[in-house]
Image (cartoon, rainbow, N blue to C red; front, side, top):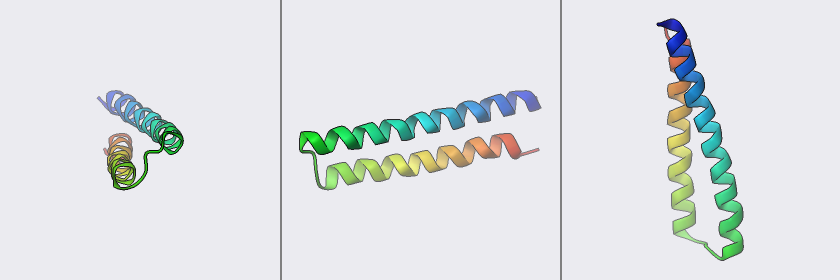
Length: 65
């Protein structure tokens, strides 16, 4: 059961890193396409909150006994 938690925790952390990579590309392309204002920053803030909670969950899966 411990190995399953570690594998799931690593999967969640890898997914979180992929989300951060997606946010980076979204930001890079949005600025070029002229998307500015509340939509850009609102979606970025929501993605950062989701990523932070996901990262915390992944670490807790690995660390918790």
